[in-house]
Image (cartoon, rainbow, N blue to C red):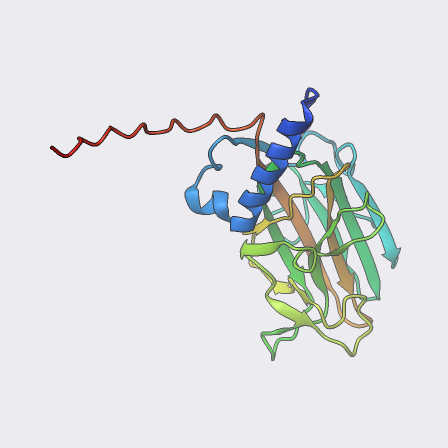
Length: 263
């Protein structure tokens, strides 16, 4: 269930808008993990949270505004699921998002709803996922089938890897590089591949795009022309960012005491 993701903001005078823009730019310049290091938002900002656990739908339906497509390969598409492999089937019962890992070339994509960070900063995404995707059993750094996280900032028209888009992993990042000799649509890229042995946590900061409609995230899994795996499950998505409702109040100035006049 998505919570606290839609807000209406009143019109403000130009000088306030400019001031807010300068404040946000200053916070971003300090670094995208500012809120993470402090454990709270910067002064004059409040924390906004949202999430999706895929538990408000009946499988195989996806939540409203989520989109599944197959750019290559046979059905199925991404669905919500409450059973099957890889196990366990969900992090928070009963459901998780799920896609298979077939023995043919495929490119299967799950796009989230849009997230807007207007007048905000320090956005961070956390999710739990469980994957068993075909990988080399001889080279622990080599994957054959793999999953990646991508981001769009132009309304979902184009996507690029979360790192190339200006984000970065805090924990639980990619663990292998996809082989270049088996026809994978993501050949040569870093990805999640192999067996996670259950649900693991990934935390990633994302660029706080200020323009409408914000960002859209994509979980993308690609397979090659030989071998298969059990698939990929994604659950317990949480997204947080810091929002300011107005300019910071001015700090009080210290009035210096008059110096005594030498006698």
